[in-house]
Length: 406
Image 1: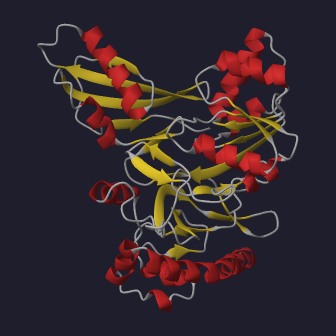
Image 2 (image 1 turned 135 degrees about the vertical axis):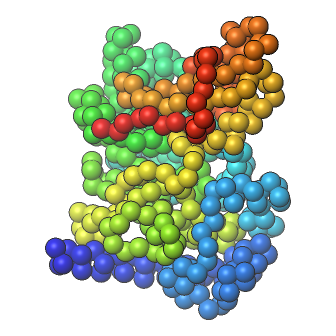
Image 3 (image 1 turned 30 degrees about the vertical axis):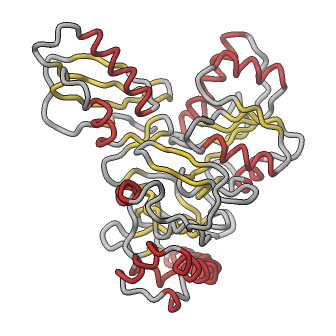
């Protein structure tokens, strides 16, 4: 056991050493270009010129998603983290709302590594089932596919019938999207009698439990899981099923102690904390809110053990984060609602979201109220939900996650 721990610590030390020079260069350049980041360093008592190693960032408090949201509200649209001379190719909006700039260059979010592991190359026809509207996921995978020379079918989400038919007609052989949407696509193709051509899939945005992987395997022989965020792009990817998540180039990924924020090198649970190794957007020591731990990869290198939970109140539903504050804001303009509660369940390997409402006594048309709430959830949160009025609601959290991942 001690030998295994020593090997893991040595591998982690080697990984951090490979990142040290890039981290030091990034910190110095970002401090020179971005006054808000420079001020953040000064507040932590850190001299940018003195940063030599990844470990030197341990004194910098982790930037949480809530803090990023507050910074963007105070100094829209990017909270002062984007260099004034940066020229983003696209601008995106994720639930919160949080605004993300597209970095310059080819495959700026680094997803090529995950697609290469899947076997995507020139000549591959790939069905991209991530949204192309406002949120960056569709564009992220699109850019990486094009950089590899693959042909992209921009399916997006929401039309299973047409996507299943297009996949069959065009002989699509690869897929990127949510694992639950892949299952729904397989079911739709079988229901309609379409040929099923997809042989490999890269899935992300929600957990891939063993039972769903086993269900998919007869239909899609190779399914690899990956992990990323709207703010930072690709953060980890499988090179084989259940191999752990390899860390791509261009980003420092750390697992940090939940109490102290210090970097962990052992296999204990901690928060995934990210530093982009670029100076035009100072996303440095950014806490993703995801929980993970280190494990040894096939060649002894450190890999993430997968996403093992969430820090704080926000949860992910069908690939999108649901924030209590944002959910409350979506319903705030409806005075007929005295209280509400969101419940997330799991059925047939798909997330099921319901919204329970406690209506005011003077509300005479509960069906109309539910319809208005459904529309608000679609437009404000980009999530569909079953909306019901209930006779009472006990005090408690506004979002309840009842899912079991097994």
